[in-house]
Image 1: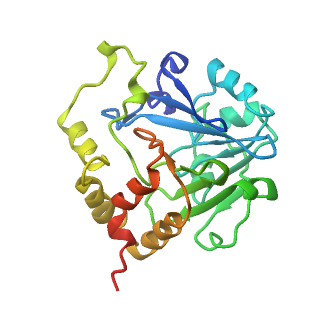
Image 2: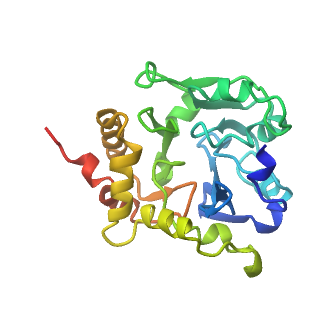
Length: 276
């Protein structure tokens, strides 16, 4: 049930941040497997036509709703589930913005259709579904495509959708790359309630940290995340690296502002090298 995965008081612990004048993040605590503090983050973007797109939506709390209303037209036209895991609050946003297009990867509509005992997860139809077959030809619509490039990383186990918001040079992603520890996402949690370093948590953080030589995350991506289809994974990473981004907004861990491209190329170095 989704109520085991989200904070009981999301408005109290949510950090709302203007990354740019057009990009707002909503950061919250989140425990993976109920034990590992990786945090969660939704991202709201104002398009050039003044409508809004939300990626990996988190709870639409009163504070979040107020921020939505104050950005651009206040009208969310796109709700994007960035992989098969980041979808719990899609229905909540869809009920608030019933005209929005719901976008996600293959497998997610079917996954949600099987859920019958969770009031958070509805069965709203998806307007755009990315598949391995259509990924190189699919379009969303003229307004969205004017501002975004996107890549479906079907070789990733979670079926990742990665978006590049061209006006502000911001890369928005979910689980393609973590940047732990999740400092911002736990910053409003009372000290007594913060999770403290289990062995599993420290190990996972070491495997998903971008500092220094980033050997842990390089190995995690190479030997775990990309092993099922490394050629396909490498192809997607190289397309993403072709974009001119400066900031990376991940769902888990710290946002990387200014030197995002440099960090990306360090983390994915092995995938960017020609192994032929």
